Amino acid sequence: MKKIPSPAFLPNMVPARIFMPVLLSMFLFIGTFFGYILPKVETHLMDRKREMIHALGESAMSSIRYYAELAEGSSISEQEAKRQAVSHLRSLRYGPDNKDYFWINDTTPRMIMHPYRPDLEGRYVGDTEDPAGKKLFLAFLDTVKKTGGGYVNYHWQWQDDPSRVFSKISYVQEFPQWHWIVGTGVYVEDVHAQIAAITEHMTFIFLGILGIIAVLSVYIIWQGATGEAHRREIEESLRKSENKYRLLAETAREIILLFDTDLRVTYANTAWKKISGYSFAEMEGLDITSLVPPGQKKQFRDKIDMIGHEAVDYLLESDFFLKDNRVITVEATFAKLDTGESAGTYLMTARDITEKKKIEAQAKMQQEQMMQADKMVSLGTLVSGVAHEINNPISSIMLNIKVFDKFWQAAQPILDSHYQEKGELDVGTMSYPQLRERMPRLLSFSHEGVERVKRIVGDLKDFSGQKPADLRETVNLNEVVEKAIGLMFSLIKKATHDFRIEYYENLPTLQGNSQRLGQVVINLLVNGCQALTGPHQGLYLKTGYLEESEEIFLEVKDFGEGMEPDVLERIKDPFFTTKRDSNGTGLGLSISDTIVRNHGGWLDFNSEVMQGTTAVVLLPRYSPDEVIGRMI
Image (tube, rainbow, N blue to C red; front, top):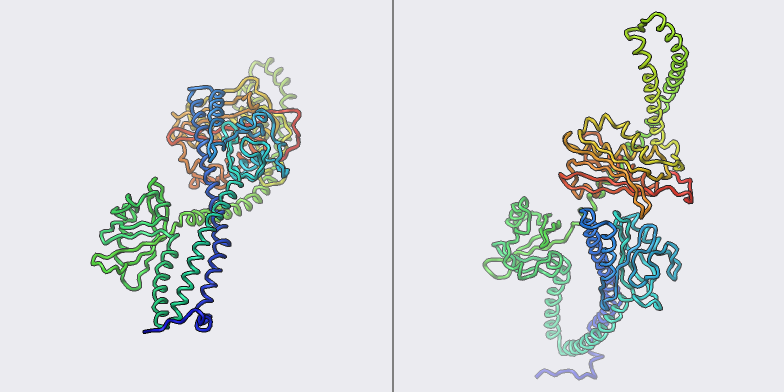
């Protein structure tokens, strides 16, 4: 009978190579949990909170858009739509205690609605600071101006308890049509509390696990002392278990699908279920090629058929449909598992590279933009030289026209007297009465034409960056529009037979640069004309004034082909154009947006395919109290 060593002899019999790895593993286990896993959990929780408030913010914006659409459809007035939207958001609550909320302020910034701080409603909140001295509402405004929406960190009262102040992160975004900034947020303290609870709970669990590990370690050491054969048996068992769980650990973050030779799914891991939205019951027995777009099915099947052949690349890039009909791009690898069954099982592991593809596409687009920008630098140098060369002969022509005008003024009385005496006078191929009627107009038209060329030369110099344009001019938008239409009349007449203009009477003035604003009007009219597919389609222009926000607006609406949503999102991006084949540079609307923003306003577009596009320019009215001297 084999003798088992007593515990007293274990320290001398058990070598360090047996118990030292056990102790090291315990320390690594503890260090990994507290030094890596818990921080990762905290980061993950914070990301989930960010995603949650982003989704809640989108939900609130959907509600506001609903009321705005009612107003646009004349179901209710815009004032009533705003009132109902405020009332709806004021009543919304969420969170563990059902006390988390939404608030609304405008771009002044002025507080429109805050369920827990009614004392702020209707007040200017631009100077409101948190305990750290951060002007949070100005931070909200800066965030939405830069990106249209984003996250802001600050300190604020705890829900409805003003006596308690905690760190908070909020997601804010703008509803440009009403100039509203809508926000909601979560308290960082909530995440810390969850982490503390997880830490406390997991500490007890891991202490128990460590205790079990310690007992098992003593048992393993004890068994190791009984003999080399027993030790090898335990090590072999541990090695098999380690390999098994290592495989699971290494692939847990990847998409894993198992399918048979009929391409029917037999297993889908948690990562795929989270990404796709399918449950295992929905995936089981599903033809895996039904997840692949029709144009990629053959390539997918061919790749599976090649499994087992030597010198075959098992990597495949393919698109996959998710349950909500979204499409992701994955990078997949395939293998055939030896399960001992005659039918056989295939393993597919894949990783989502959708964001990677987007980043690559953006990098390619930025490279193209940089190339275009380089071309524009060269063009600016050329334009500056051309403008300088044209300026001298234009000045000479203007002086000559003035001389011709003086000559005509001096010669007209003499010619009148001669015509009255003789009764008949021809000058060249034209009778004197016709000449007398047409000459002032010819001189006037010539002078206006030269002035127009001079203005164009000035615009070219401004474009080439020689001097800034002043925004100190008092501008009547109706007059700017009228001049722009005069310059564009031939193009408009050629593009449409249905052109309508509606001027707002007694339109307030604004402070800015009429020439720059005229450039905006011309760009919008050019785009409107180019959007029309036939002269039967209309082009409408309207000016107006919004008393509530004290803003002047210009609306240019065409009934042309409209734009897809993805095109509409990028319409103001520099160098983005759908008219590249017709020498479009993609700078017109980008420059127009910059000019409007420099005037303190907004440029927005609404479009539906085959229904047309509406461009709206909002500009603040002139106020003598404003600080003047802004420069483009």
